[in-house]
Structure formats: C-alpha cells, structure tokens
Image 1 (cartoon, each protein chain N blue to C red):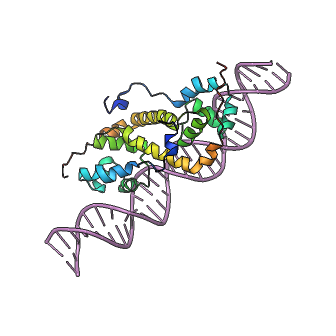
Image 2: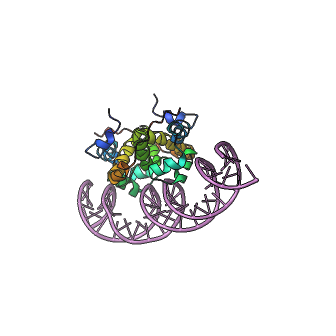
Image 3: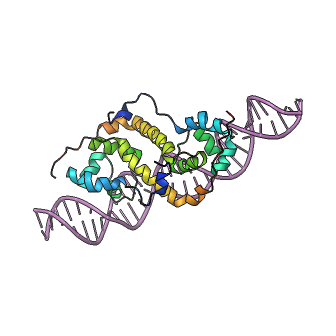
Length: 107
Length: 107
DNA sequence: CTGCTGTGTAATCTCTGGCGTTACAATAAC
DNA sequence: GTTATTGTAACGCCAGAGATTACACAGCAG
C-alpha cells in the first residue's frame, strides 16, 4: 500500500533469471545452448541471466516473451524491481538528502 | 487484456518527460535550474528529459520520487512502456522470427 | 535600450555496461 | 573412454547516460 513499499523491503526482489532457471527453462526441456540459438543471443548471455549476473534488458524481455508466450512486461517488470532496489541500496544516502518540493499552489 | 497489448498499440506510450513538463513541473513553480540542483543532477539532464530525449533511469526515478513524493515505480513504469515500444518498433522483424517454445510437458 | 533570467543545445570527455567470440576446464551423461 | 552441457576468463566493440563549458536567443524589468 505505501508508495515507498519497494524501499522498505528487506529482501532483494526476485530476479527474472530465477524464474527462468527454476521454472521456465526446466519446464521447456531445452538446454541453454538451444535456448540461446532460439532467442538469437549468445550462450553466454543466457547463462549470465540464469545466474542473475546480467539484467533482462528490453530486448531480452521481448525475446523471452516471444519464445515462451508471455508478456514482455512480465519479464521487464521483475527486472525493474531488482534495479530499483539495487540502486536504492547503493545511493540511499544521496537520495535522502533530496528535499521534498513544497506543493506551491501557484496554480 | 491481451498480452501483446503493448505491441499492438498504435501510439507511442506517454514519456515520463511529458508528465513532468506539462503537469508536475508547472505545478511546482520551479525553474529547470532549481529542479536540477534540487535533484542533484545537471540542468542539461533535466532539460533533455523534459524534451523526451533522454530516458528516466532508475536513478532519476528515485530522485523524482523523492522530490515530488511519488513512487519510483510510477516514473520508471512509464519509461519502461516507452522503451518496450521503441525496441519493438526497431526490431519487430527479428522478434517475429523467434519461434514459440513448444510446451514439452516433460514434467 | 540594457540587462538579467531562463532555456535550448553543440562540443567534448568519461565511465559503465551489455553483448559477441573464442577458448578452456569441469562436470554430467552415455 | 567420449560426448554433451555448462561456467567463465579474456578480449574487444559500441551505445548511451551524465557532467562541464560555452554560446545563442527568448522574454521581461528598469
């Protein structure tokens, strides 16, 4: 409910690679290499995403969506939450210094 | 309702810069320069976002959220839609070539 | 007319990060 | 054994987000 819900989370949100590694890929019966060729990316890219060392980019979100019949938003949304969380962890001190703009009702 | 809702849109989704330019910034009564200092970024960065020439990054989403009391997800979500749309425009041919993975129920 | 303020925007640099290719080692499967 | 699958190091490439500096031009107050 709170807007700053994300900022208050204790745990890092689920990386899309986890879904891919633990559910989607096993269910598909594909090897990493096969999937990579199918998606049109390198085997390395697939591997690093599975290990959550690389983000699912806009491009990858589209590719995964095509291959697995899901929406690109689904994959990218997961990634966004992770990105927002990571950035907040890294720079929370700086963000805390930013002051709220007063609602100057000079409308 | 359809998953590929985004892909079927005729119009490019609303860039967060538009909201900032047409609503949020005017309502605040701030100049671009003031806002830039407040956010801790360069005047140029603010200007380019207002003109929709630069995306709202994860970092900027946090800054805007702090300054205007909104959620980072709000700003970033708008940007995501734009990004997905742009990428799809640019590479739809390549994506169309990606074949759907058969649901091998080798479960 | 003269400034001052706010703004757009080149030019230039820096840094980060996503991706590919190649190659090698380790492990699992046959 | 031999082959298939996978992790990952070492390259190199290139795009893009951001800062800084500087200049041009608008609008408005005096």
